[in-house]
Image (cartoon, rainbow over all chains, first blue to last red; front, side, top):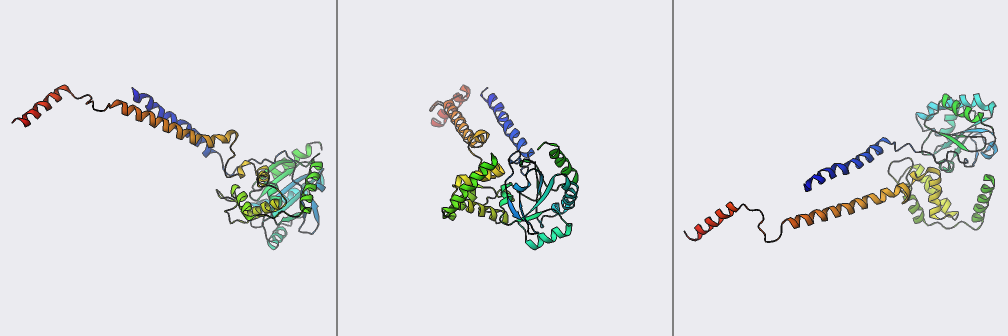
Length: 177
Length: 151
């Protein structure tokens, strides 16, 4: 009779462990919710590849699509590059600014990337990685959508598509400033 | 409001800068970096990773320490940006407390279980008591023993 409770105790002990494992294996270790959503976007001032100063503060009142990229980021950054330029052309007269931040890159390679895709929106390097860390970037490409009040509202990890950009920007443009 | 806060922060940073950069001990930089997860690697700390990202993060740690922030403040800065995910060891509070408590609780429970089982076993066999031998067998042994002694 003594063995009867032991016979049940062992499977009973295994159940919670299995449940924990099932939960753990289902979650993606690379999928991390950004703590920055709905919080004020970190300010930055940069000098673009074209040589002009650009500060996020100066863009207050506009919806900002902030894209982190690198010329070595294949294939995702190359996949999304045409969509970024198309989005910029479609939305620049509607109160949207697209800003590209190039991280961990060589100047020459970055300029070649911009020339290849004919990017006409402002792009700037982040040589010390300060802006990338301020935005909790852990890989490229990552895109942040900042509303008119300067709050981070959406984050896209991985290549951006026209549809996704449109959906996010339209949402933010509809909001009263 | 936010602008005001940013202004205060900028002034503080400027003051810290004006007071002269605090000399930074490389061991402190390493200590902070060792607690942070390298964001582009799996299971490597910022101190151990040779990646450029980690090297830039070490630069940022050094910079913030030089500006007069404490190691805890620098750590908090990274948590603010990346969430608790950035910490290699989960903080000992809230749900995470389970991670710290369950292994020790399990160990304790196991030890108690072993103690209980051992005590039961030792109670089952009282010393010197030839428990449960078939009386017929005992009789036969006795007979055979006396036969060998007195052939």
